[in-house]
Length: 313
Image (cartoon, rainbow, N blue to C red):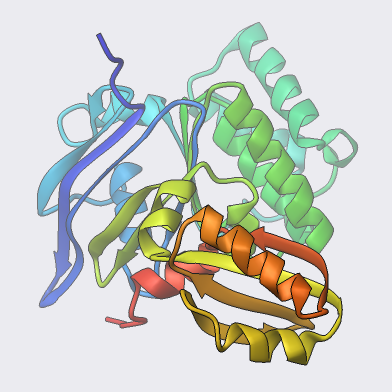
């Protein structure tokens, strides 16, 4: 018997007047997976996340978190879900320690359990040196760590994160990404929206792409890359003879979309690996000194550009 997904979204729809913010969206996230939730501005990502967090009601469809319906058993679903909104507005001037204690009490934690839990999330999120600081006096990176700590207090199985890396400096983004990897390794499922696609590509197991409220594609990054990349993409780096290599490739069978970018030659190839090996041998025979010749998988940015039209609503 196969286990049910940690998150199961089915035929979710939500309209605001004449605008269909979310239209018949379905996807799954398993335990231990990090799924990127991407799409143009106004695609319906935040609306979907708010429904999952029981902060909004769908017009149709449903979602199950840990087997609990967000419509029929919202309290049980919320016990399994931790939601980080795109904006974190803590109580003004409340020290970090008091803020976490207040939130732990709000989650129903009592006595030694509350004390141990707060100490655990403080240690995990690296907040030990900031407990006496006012919550409104933290840097953006530390505020996001506090936001994550608050989200983890009730030990949810699923984390739903709306643009958590927005505004973070490069070091803070790397550190935050490492925390998410640790959480996934511990078995938590993570659904994360972000416009920083290069960041997502380094940590995500899969993606959900939506546009104008409609699901475009969902699945593992590798599977989607194979779908959107009709031909093999090849990257060539040469020691000398770059222009000669370009002229040569333009005359070869099965070669298309030849271009030079950043001192490297790229092209698409629509034949098998034997033909590709013969092409490399001919290129070297032309006197081109090749230092690198390899397949290139479609990046998350390329997946996004090939699967969406950039339409806004």
